[in-house]
Image (cartoon, rainbow, N blue to C red):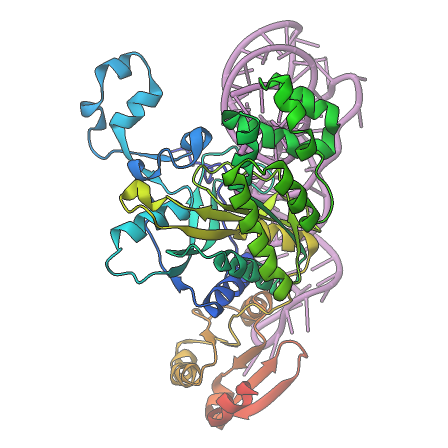
Length: 455
RNA sequence: GUGGUUGUAGCUCAGUUGGUUAGAGCAUCGGAUUGUGGUUCCGAGGGUCGUGGGUUCAAACCCCAUCAUCCACCCCA
């Protein structure tokens, strides 16, 4: 039989023990901050019903959902017309009713509605789990990656947005990396679209504005016209495109521009509240109002937050915002939530690129017992048990291989101590303890091994 | 979905204008050293040259297709 080449699906990864130490450092840091602010953990299944997921992430998002084939003879129920017509999109609906989760926010909204009677609001939860997207993998983009979500649901207060920014700031301070926090508000974007009468084109507008630095004002305008905006509308948004200055200057100018839009003014007010909190309780990271920040996810209605590394280019490492009606879709209207998601894998890439992981020992074995034969092994077993009871990570080599090989094993695993007990030691009641780093060897009375190794 | 890059040993890569049996380093295993690792020395195993066609007396090398890969765009964490 031909052997098959071992491989894993595109965009997925294995993690070695060394990588797991670094990954856990990130997860532990993030989780510790979440807990510090009083958020509680939950988990949800890897699979959700497709009805839960579809339509929440825009057209693009639906395409990027991993769908799970129904069990059993799924073609039996398939629609003949769709099958013959090779209509993948419609056929999918009849042969697949489950999908892998695309993010943690939508499953969270589903969770909140489903468990509403057990939850006391405002509900602050965190969730650290993998998500899957059928994207084309590239730098910093994976098909399976971890998100670390914090959300608070059931409270309208802008204080929650502020607290999320504090959390972001704390996390990246602890991780020792500089970030830029970009803020915007969907209501402002709606206001802009409203005053130029182009509500439909809001995404095209923000995408074009976003390119200002790269391609210049003329090309931005050309792109707007190309996207079907009338000349008058393009004229009208010139001041918005060219908006510059400090955050408060931008807000003042926007206030005038959007004075006829109630929604727009509400968005400005929300941002002013947020900046108000930030002026009282300063945070370390730079915060910038960025009108071109749109975020594709359909469900955002208020604040939009995105975080980028200042020292590494890898796209955003954090993103989130406020959603007023996600739970409404599941039959529980009028509950507003706001949350943010840390992209653990990208944060890993940033820290790795900048080489700023703290040097920490692999949390591994402290002492290895050399196996010199079955009698010696049996003699060692109770000693090993005692060391373990004292909290010392202890291994005993499973076979009586050549000592050279056993020593090499200890060396490669960077085990700091090796204990040798052979016939001589069994008779004398003293073990030979070798310090692998210094190469020193000491005879230690077997009863005193635990205290010797605990030092 | 669009454009480009690269596919040779487990990993990183050499491989001349197409020319005999495709190489190196690292890693692995064994020996030098039967109770002592890291250094050193010696040796061994490991290849459908991504896959399938074509051109040629002859293809890792040229041509076509295909798959995979990485990167950019789109979008996103």
